[in-house]
Length: 113
Image (cartoon, rainbow, N blue to C red; front, side):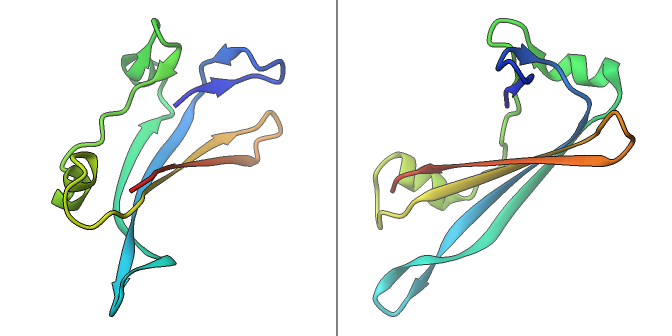
C-alpha cells in the first residue's frame, strides 16, 4: 500500500488498513460476472507509529502487507489452472484528519483470471 500526499509524493500515515479478497460466485453456467462474495479479510492496525514503522518498506516507500493463508482457488488462478476467474482485492485505509474526523481512502485491484 502506498500513501501519497496532496503533491503525489510518497508519505507515511497512521490508521487502520483493511484488505478484502472477493471471490466470484459460480452459477449454473460458471462464474457470473459482477456477482461475488467476500472470501477473506486482513486488518492491520497502523495507529501506533512504532508498529507502523515495522510494516514500512523504505526501498519501495510503501507499507508491505503479506496476504497469508490464501484460498486454493487463488493459487489455481495464479497457475492458470482450472476455471478462469478474476481475483479482486479491495483496500480501505481509515485515518484521522486534522479536524479529528475519520477519513477513509479506498482502492481496489483486479487480477484477471
